[in-house]
Image (cartoon, rainbow, N blue to C red; front, side):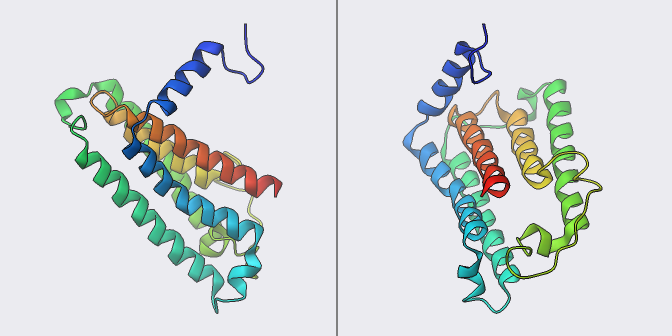
Amino acid sequence: RIAPSGCTPRVRSHMAHVLWNMDADAWAVCGILSLPHLLYAWLWTRPQDLRNVAERPVATFANLAYALKGVQFATVIYWWMQTRENVFEWKDTNLMQVILAAALLAIGQALNVGIYRAIGKPGVYYGCRLGESVSWHDGFPFNVVRHPQYVGAVLTVWGMVSLVFRTAHPGLLGMATFWTTLYTITALVEDYL
C-alpha cells in the first residue's frame, strides 16, 4: 500500500532515521549548506533590496553566491576530515559505485555547464529580477529538466556520496538528503513565489 506522500511507511521511516540520527556537527554543516538558499529566497522575493544598494546587482549576487559556495565546500571538507569514520580509499569502492558516481557527476556538471552557456551569468543570477534583460531559452538544458542548475547540483552531490558512502560517516547521507531538500525548496520558491 502506498502512502499519500508517494513513499511507503518503511521508506518514510528510513528517511526520518537518516535525518534525525545525525549528530550536532552534521546539523551544523546543514546550517551552513542553507546559507546560499536563504540568499536565493531573499533575492527572488525581494530583489529590490539588492538593486537599492548595489551598482551591479547581478555581479554582486554572483560574488555572494560564489563566496557562499566556497564556504559550503570548505565546511563539508572540514567536517569530512574531522570525522574519523570518513576514510576514503579506492579499495573500498566497487566498479558499480565508480560508474554510478561518474555518471551522476558527468550529467550533473553537463547540466551546470549547459545552463551557464544557455543563459549566462545574468540568467543564472536572477538578472530577470535584478533589472537585466535575459532572453528566454528553451533548448539544452531546459529541454531536459525544469531546473537544470539545481538538478545538476543535486546529481553532483549524490555522485560524490555514491563514491564514498560505504565508508562515510552516517551523517553524510543525512546531509546529502538535506541538501537535496534545499534545492527542491529553492526550485519551488522560484516556481511559486
